[in-house]
Image 1 (cartoon, rainbow over the protein chains, first blue to last red):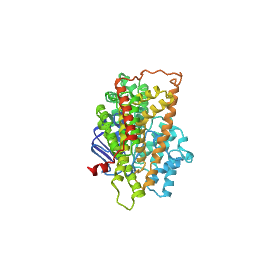
Image 2: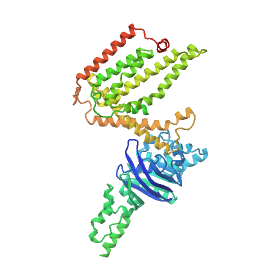
Image 3: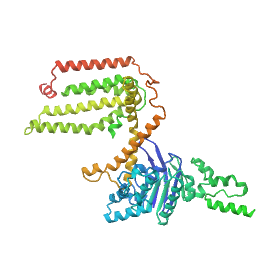
Image 4: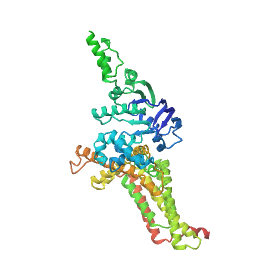
Length: 272
Length: 265
């Protein structure tokens, strides 16, 4: 469980990135943090594993303040996958890359090799285990980065912009993957602009603007609130837009799921 | 890293900022040469005060002091090693003499003088102007461009290094752990991604430049042209005067050591 209590944060150059943010993320939650560039999304999630410490206020991870423990210590609980895999890949082989964190955490050798096999298999990277990560494609590198974090099985997984530069198929795989993580009772936090992706996942949505949380609630409630979404420089999902524009047909305006939309439309067509 | 803070340029206007970069560079060179010429403490103390008026006029006191603070660790090492090695070689069983201390202080001060002049120069000269100065000094444009680009990308790289550090810390890397050698090895996971992305970035930059007709004409023209003004001539004159004076003193006047001067009086 992550509790953020009235957190303020400003960068050394004076930019105030968080201005009084409070939020609680319970175990097993699936949260999408959304908002325009510079809203403070990444700054907020960097507080979850102690990379940034609040200037004012407090962040508690399982009841422990992030000020009192090191990042390396928190990382065992909170796995953070960065936006750009090129910022973390450095080993000669994919296998070493995945084992890096496990070695840092001091796991025994046989445990490491078991976990590496598990993580590579999970993300379909087993065939590349002896390949250099620099030889892989962008999407594959992103998967290696993901595997290197999931390898130690953290309770909470944070994904910063996981869909950027991914084709549709890979996004779909990612979505299934997140569903899988949720089935294992993990807490998943994603930071993203990708409206369609969020609409398909249907998580709890936290909307941010200018260092504050503007709205927090179920995706179908927040993403269909035209005014709210526009204020955050986003647009509602396409399905919702169509339904909004067809509201004189008596269509509900709070639909984000394609399958649900299909059902409603079928009912309408068959019924008339 | 705070040493580099003292080299960061901010665009403000002051008589020092407006000086011609070539003349300013000449001034810095003169100070360098004079600092290297003398090994005695007395002239180096005098030299220490020479750039201070420029700092005050330019209004960069805070940044300038920060760069000196940043260099203080290195200055301390220079003092320490000069003192220890000279002591071991020359005076070992006896008590260290006053002249040895004076010599070590002088060597340290020489370093401080170089840092402070360098700092004033970079604090008051924009990288673009510097590139322009190089260009108008007939340095081939390729070199000027490489130089200005390198300077311009320092903050970008610093930011990237921070992100990489965050990413690796999130994977349990502890930079401060282990003995000296282990600590150096801890930086490998930071350096490799940093270098790889710098190379990637430079290739991308090269492609972007070529698509914008880089090198299409042999003779480039510039929007701005550097011109010497009265203040520039004045600074140049002062620099030459200083150099001549220093050479005369160095050649003809024996400089007393500070400790003998003090013990006589």
